[in-house]
Length: 352
Length: 244
Image 1 (cartoon, helix red, strand yellow):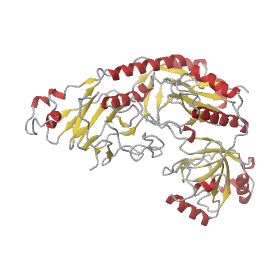
Image 2: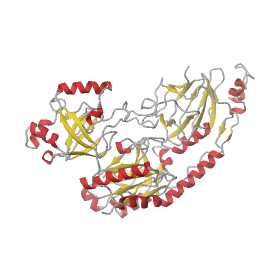
Image 3: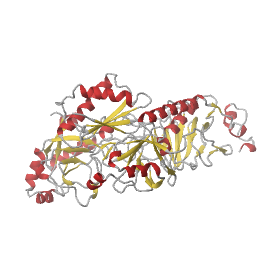
Image 4: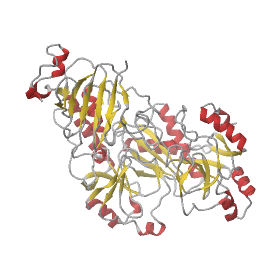
C-alpha cells in the first residue's frame, strides 16, 4: 500500500512549493517557489530533508491531513493558532509549531489559522513523491503546473509520500523562533528609479504603506501616498519597453501606487520599477498580511549582499542549534505505543 | 556601443543595450544571452542562475551567496568587450495557420477594412512577414513576435475580449502572437493554429524560444482538424516544423 497524506479538509491557499523553478523565465515561466524561503528551509532542516525539498506552503489557514502511512514525521514552521493531532485511539494533543512530530496511520493533523503572518510551512521527512515539472515541484496555479495537479490542495487529494514509514529517532525542535528582523524593509533603488521625481522617491522612502486585500502569491498592492513619476515620464505615460522582473521588484503604474512582485510574478513587464526588495527581507514580504504596514529604506547592492550573507549565517546557526524536543505534554504517546509500553486504553489526561 | 547596468536588488541586474526596439539591439541581447549560457556550460560565471532576454535588455539573475555584483559585472563587461556575434544562427520555425474559418478569424475582415486591403492581401502580408521571436512573457509560452508588415499596423482593440481561444493567431502594432491558453486579450484575431504553444505533456513544454525566426504556413480547415487531432493525442511530429 502506498503511503500518503490525505486532505480531509482543505485550507485556504495550500500549495506544494520548493525553492522555485529556476531557469525558464526566458520561456515566460514564472519561478514560483516558497514565498518565505526561510520557513521552508527550517521545516526541511527539522525533518532532515535537503534544503530544496518541496513542502506544503500553508496560506492563511491550514488543512486537515489524514495519515495514510505506517508513520510519518512532519515539521510545521510558523505561528499557528490551535492545531491538533487527533485520534484514532488517543486524545487530541496540541500540534506545536517549530518542531517535528511523529504521526501514525489514522491520525489527523488539524492545522489551524496562521497568526500574524500569511504563510507557514509543513515539511514531511523524505518529501512528497510527486513528479517534478521542468525540474521543480513548485505549484504555479495560473498555468496549472507543478505541485499537486498544478493547483491548490482540495478535499480528497492524496499526497504521496516518498517514505512508507518514518525513520526511528528523536523529535527535533528549533531553539527559538527565527528572527526575521524588524524595522524598514531594505530595498535597492532601480532598475527604473530615474522614472520618478525626487519628490516621488522621497515619498516612497519616507511614507508608510499598507498591504491591501489585493495580495497573493503574485504580488501585493500597497496603499499609501501616491509616488510621483518624473515629469518627462508623465507626459509619455508610465510605460517602459518591457524588461525582466526580479523577485521583490516594486513596480509603480501610472496611478502611482506601488505593487511588490513576489514568487508567482510574471517574467517581464512594462511598468517602471522604482526599487527592488533585498533578498534578506523578501521573506518578510512573503509573510505580510493585508492590513499590515511597511516602510522602506534604501541600501546599496553591496550592503544588501552583505545583509544576505549575515542572514545565511544566522540561518545556519539556527539549524546547527536544533535540539531534541521533549514529548508534547510530558509524555510522548506515539513513542510509548511504538515501544509497546502502553495500549490505547491508558493515557495521561494531563497530557491533553 | 555602450551598455547600461540597472540594479534589480541583490539577486539580479539588467544589461540594457538601448532604449528602442530594433533587430540590431535585440540581436546583441540574444548574443549575450547565448554567450552567458556558453560560459555557464563551461563552468565559468559561477553563481549566475538564469538570464532573461527581452527586446532591448538582458536580465542576469544570480545567487548572492555564490557570487556578487562586483564580481559578476566586470565578467559580463569582458564578454561584451570581446565582441558579441552579430550573425547568430537562429532556429527557423514554421507555424501552420488556418485563416479560413470565421470562428478562427473573427477580426480578419475588420483588419482588411481598416488597413484598406482585401482579406487575401492581409493573409498574404501575414504569410510574407519576416517574423522574429523577441521575448516570451505575460504567460508561459506567450511569444511577442515582431516583424509584421507595416501595412497591417493597427493599435490594440479598444475593447479587449474577455475570452480569446487557445492557439488564436493575432496581430497588433508591428507584432503577431499566438495565445498559449484561453485568456483575455486585446489583439486582432486573424487565424488559428492547431498547435499548442504550451503543452505540459511535452519534454519541452514551450515550443517557441527567443531568437527564433518564424513564418506562418497557410492550411485549410481539413488540415487544421487533422493536425489538431494529432496534437491533442500527443502524436504530432513537432520536429518537422523546425528548420524544415
